[in-house]
Amino acid sequence: MTVRRVKPWRRAGTPGAARYRLRGWRRWLMWAMFAPMLGGGLVLLALGGDGAIGGAVLTVVAGSVLAAWEWLWRRTLLELSADGLRLRQLGYTLEAPWSDVAGFHAAPMAQGFVLAQPIDTPGARRLAAAAAYAGPQDPQRSRWIGERRYIPVDAFAWHLHHGTLVAEVAARAPHLEAPMRSALADASRPLPAAERRKRVWLAALIGALVLLGVVLGWMQPPGLDRAAAYVYAAVAPLAALQVALATWQAVRSRHWLIAALLTAATLVALGWWALAWQEVMAPARPAASSSSTSTSTSTSNR
Image (cartoon, rainbow, N blue to C red; front, side, top):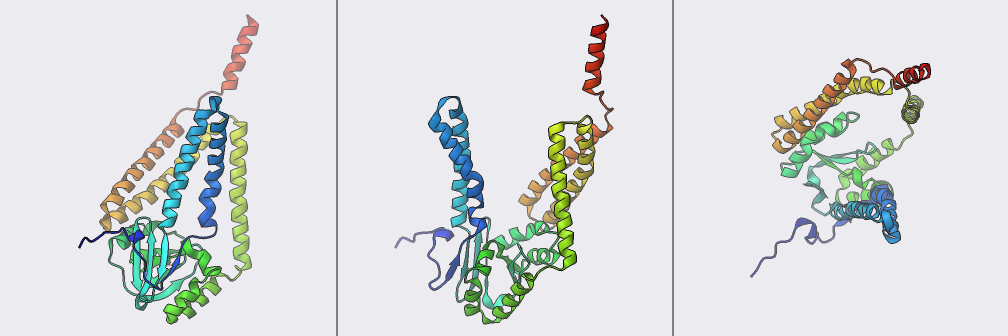
């Protein structure tokens, strides 16, 4: 009898399991970004002429991105069965029995199940290698990921607030119902007034900096390039340090492929730093307006 080997994402699921895919803005964000580009490319192709080549490029790029996104969306799945839960995402698959799920983390954009015991699988080790990028604003979550005791479900947050995910978990693991509902209620409470003011001021500062960058880029005042070089020289070492720390963590965890990629990124960041400092240490170039003024003056004297 011939045994047909089927890839995991095509294998028949567990009978009676509840399966969840991406919903809400996570489902349609890529379409909102690239569908207009695809439509514009098709219009240029239909019109023909000189714009046909550009239309073909836009169509191929946008169509490829959307096709890849649909492929990825169909293979991103959260499955709840009577035995436990299984998460399938690009690059890893995580699963654990309900008896091993100790709690639920409900921080916005960082929801996930906390496990009592670490998961010893290649997928869990790959995710643990990226623990440094879990976010400095949530060090507890980063620690759980590094310990391989975390199954992130923030991609399925729509089902937590608008779907049946909480009820389905409660039906299969009653010990998690109270912690999940309590954690979600705490996470949805309004922020304190001081925290709201801090976020408003931070958003206003970011908006002002973006607006200032747009205005300066449009006006091109003298000395803009040199000022940008000073900014790069200050920011580049911070970026290089962050990537270097992630590289060291990957080396300690013996994730050699990730360590090699991060090493290359560290070298790029150091090169960016060196170029920025070279620009800062270079003597200031005379303004173009001064040279043009002197040229016009000498011409009029003749």
